[in-house]
Length: 630
Ligand code: PLP
Image (tube, rainbow, N blue to C red):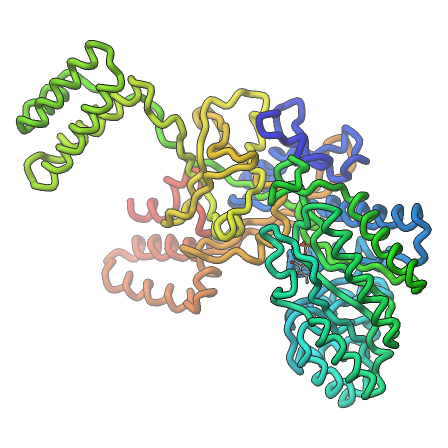
């Protein structure tokens, strides 16, 4: 288990149990030993066929743990509560969850439900996100904020204003100066007093991968000149009291509390200036950026780690705001954060299966093949072959490799010219593999083919090379016999995972031989991956289960199980119409297949393919299509 550093990146939610399986501790440090859930048992329950008590879902499988979400929210809230209390801060913390991190209905509904006791709200960045946030917050705390970020048009703004009429605490955060005219105009038309925030472009710059939107030249927010113009205009229209919130976001994964305190301090100065200019300021919204330790290194030098804990993060924020406001004698604002990654990353695990691996067996060279092979060679290649044999007898590994390489190149040339056949070309490949293996130069890294699409399920690995912990979810009490990279189902050379946490270019993996499947889990991927994933090669999302602790030791309940999108569903995404496609193929069957019985079997086979997921089905040699074809 130490090989995979589970205790480093996994704490406090993931560990390895006595059976060598990953166990999930939904309540973090508060988990009692018997409350651990064996992840392999969840996968078996979800994927075993109905007949053996399973739910019959196809892999890949996303396993959600709502209790982890609850624990993350409560931990964030209590970190701020503690910092506020210990520093005598004179206001409170009330966060919002940026729904873009994971818009799944049940994730957002859970967050609203779990957070209603401490006024937790939502943040939206587009019209559909605003619609979902408005409807979800109808069940939330009456004091929860609904922060409206992103570029806005009149429709977006009027939706936010309608929200206020419905007693939702929408705050329209100006991302661009032009939005102000629309806000003034629409609020008059709808006769609503808006609550306005503004996003400031801070000078503080986060130089890591996720900080490209920060600094003076960042993509979003208002410059100081623009902020002054906004204040002036609001004053002119008698609406300066509507300006109540200051927002900034210097990027995700802020690496250190020093950088954080720098940004928060600068924003707090701006906040105090807005108070001085007459705005009715109430909230400082510090954006996202609370980081996750994906590699367990707790190091600010790693793009995928951070050097602080939740408590240290909260303390740094409260201290920075309190220091600035104290000096200026400004009433302490409500502190709001838009932490997304830190709330949802841990709650889901993507489980997928390795279906095959490249062989490591040394090629067997029979005397007969060698003889046949050598006889057909042209003179120069024959000389290489003789030299190779002589070097092998002398035990000169380096020389063997040189002659083998030379021989191979010559044979490829001969093949291209049509002078040797495919059998000889295969024989030279086999010979060269044999030589490199014998000389200890064979690549020891195997390729494990996994029933997954990287583009669909781990898009940040493909897009920005972000690493996530990937670990077998069982056999962790057995020493892995190989190292491997993972290759997905897509017909695309980018569809592979060949970089792993800790800077490794391969992963220790177990042999696939033996009974049962070999399951791997991708952890900490609950933020961004689901919404960013595409349908490359028309592979859709995974099946999903929600799992909660239930009565009794080590027992769990699957409270929701949804199969992943079918072939028909993903075809529909690209405007195809599965029903028409099926009709077309059915006519074709009527035209070309004589027997009604055969025709029916073929039509059933095609129909079930439309209904099934695009991923490979384990042991699928007995599917309807082959049955029909037989
Ligand atoms: N708020 C805004 C405006 C953002 O752009 C983002 C994401 O980059 C977030 C919040 C969420 O950030 P994080 O996931 O780092 O918490």
